[in-house]
Image (cartoon, rainbow, N blue to C red; front, side, top):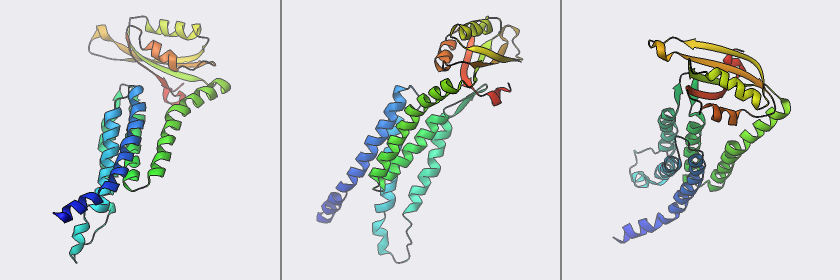
Length: 240
């Protein structure tokens, strides 16, 4: 009984590492939750804490096996499986809707949270904290930097819109773009054949130039009646 109590007290320092994983992964998850992503606070927190626990078990969970001479232990085996296993969760967050791929950044964030949890479990709390700061730099700072660079360089921006034919969507999109001070350089329309003649769909790629970022424009286009999806695209992918 005394040995069990001593063993339990020996696990108390490990709670610091587990708590660090809880705090850091929650911060990342909170940022995703505020942005209304498919994986939010709970998912990221559970992934981070779970990865930290796997790391702790890998380091300390098999100490009693050392009593057997023929047992060869590799503390990295359990931790290595976390890297492979987290791919299943990340893959489930990525989905394709027509020509738009969504969830890549969220899947990458879940993968990074697993790494943060493993670093906490390995006692590298400072490194895990620095990685969390890097996440906020990339997730919050990089989009603003890209908008600034696009405004300065005035590089063409492409908006891809999928819509139901016959609703006047293309006319409304072009009117909105020009009213916001954006110049329409080119556009390409691809019609999609469907069995229902009354629900014919099309995808238009509009290449725009101007100082104004098209992110807010896309959000407004998504509210138009008849619009199936709208997203910022790439000139190379659009073929224009």
